[in-house]
Length: 95
Ligand code: SF4
Ligand code: SF4
Image 1: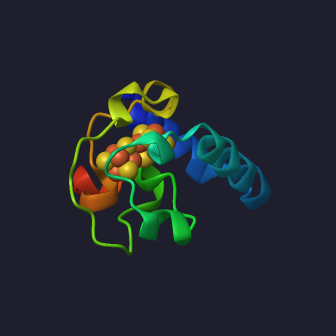
Image 2 (image 1 turned 60 degrees about the vertical axis):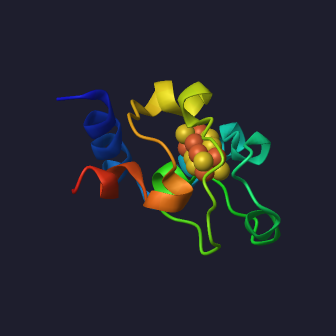
Image 3 (image 1 turned 60 degrees about the horizontal axis):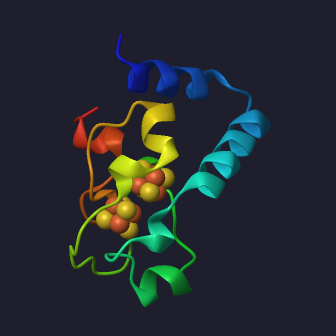
């Protein structure tokens, strides 16, 4: 089993409160705010953590993606990019 699937399954088994804490922790590590693609609309909506939450509700003009350098990428075993425009890792894997 690859790391992302393992982490996803681990989170799915967590009690709701623990899962919420894990999401808060991941969100605090998200570096989307420093990315050229991160727009004022995304900021206004207080969006982050697209890799797990899925696409932005704002139009995403792709100007580069810094997800590969984010600590969440290594921790969660992510392998994609432009989650704000394309959807979550899970959605992109078709699962
Ligand atoms: S991988 Fe990308 S979307 Fe996910 S937390 Fe990091 S910067 Fe945010
Ligand atoms: S998901 Fe990637 S492209 Fe979108 S804002 Fe975050 S770092 Fe930038």
